[in-house]
Image 1 (cartoon, rainbow, N blue to C red):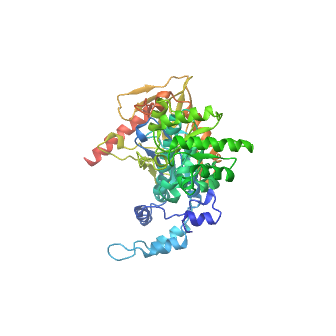
Image 2 (cartoon, rainbow, N blue to C red; image 1 turned 180 degrees about the vertical axis):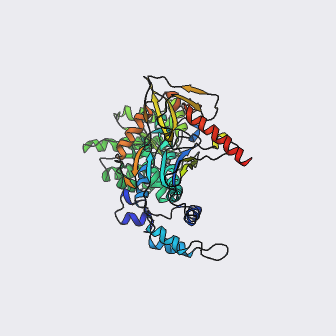
Image 3 (cartoon, helix red, strand yellow; image 1 turned 45 degrees about the vertical axis):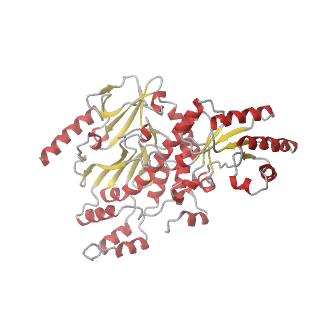
Length: 499
């Protein structure tokens, strides 16, 4: 199956067939899988966790995103004959085939059979929490690593950026305008999807509108104005073409004159029963120009005409413009949203938490590091979120291999001397929910519109300080006391074994 989004688009691409390429992986995943097969370890049962270590954008939260594409990827996981033909051509440094033919036969018959649990999209998440848990064949869990990280890393990053921008806009609608600056065709689609879940109300990306059902919006470019003898004639022609959806870009030559030309054409629109929907400012001092524009529009009787702003915006610029008193009704954000301009990667990781052979006992596993933040958490991890009368109060990471946690004390991962006791009256829910069981989908995917609503609702249940752009409050996340003790003991045992 060829992987090309524009080729797919001509075949009436749907959301479900965006992900099919099983070779969307790093070579070392395949060489490790080959090694497991050679050592007859491929059916060992393993538990892997996907998480991230640091909050993106120096913020206080992230928005989980990408699960729907993970589901599509796993449902389409199958080595096609042309995939195997390609793998058969690979050679090692000794010139011999990298993989035995019998291993390729094994891959050809391989089908997805794992259990997957995940935090649903739209939920607010924090460092070290397992966003997704894979339980099942060691070989399969290994093969999934790269693709799952690729999908969730990027979409979680963009959804988070979108949420930050939309919060900075303080209720003003935000449109995603980033297609032309996005990282390739699929990067653009994934970014539009994630930006919508994060809070944007529309996109300029027409393909994203078709595939995902996201509302599409747009105005016109400077080239439209430049194609006519005068700006006024350009606006007049656009009004004749699109009388029910006129938003004029007014800064091609002189912004204030452009606003006045928009008003003149707005009067003509009223003669045919239409209204001037808006004007767009794309350069200059947006605070000053929006105040002038509002005054001109109001005095001309266009009090409902909206002022749209674009021009390399992000959450910090929008927050600053709001503080300066800019009279902007709607924001179009492109480059710095879809490219996560100030942080190009989330930095998610995928770590083995436990393994066993047959029906033997589970062996918890962890990765050591000189940096405490990089020491992985062992076991089969779940996240329990507590809520007091006003807001969420803290998250506990616990090990399901231990059973239900008896206590409510969490140990800070960055500073183990910090312990927080959750009040006994606090309600809770466990965040990871079943997605697949033995390779069968058991999760009903919400619509993208419900996911967007969920993200807004969940953000509203955190204290405002967690959502600050600068120096946010650190929401309490830590290990269950029992898991902390198990981890500490395992660290010591592991260090002793290599000492």
